[in-house]
Image (cartoon, rainbow, N blue to C red):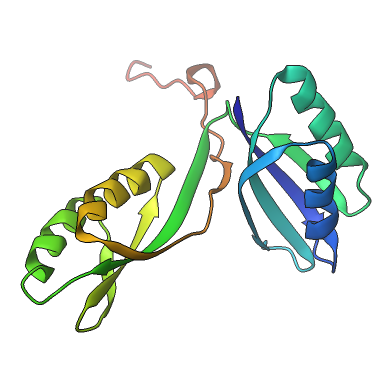
Length: 173
């Protein structure tokens, strides 16, 4: 089963290597990983998409990650309300005649052309992995020269108040 794991870590040299080394030793396959600084100085956030066999292996993974000295917090956010995105850059074979056709294909995906040369177009798209996969499949017949993907990055949605938490108002006094 695919799981989305986030880890808040100290932004220090070697942290990424130790975390991925731990996963490699325990034979977890990392499908994607993204890492970047957070709003707090010296703190980074890692987002992993990991294939795990069962809940026992998932628990083992989170416990092992939490034992790492530079890891501050580990969360499995797969089944929670999250905001997630991925970025892809796609270079497609293109002549002048195909550019309008390609523009028509990428427009519904809210993708944009970020570079044009005489024999190719570079396209940028962000969104959920399924959206990016769909665009890649549509562009494949034109000839993809190069493809780079960031991997998923995600965090929990803001708190959404439940109906019982909302104040009640009445027009009657």
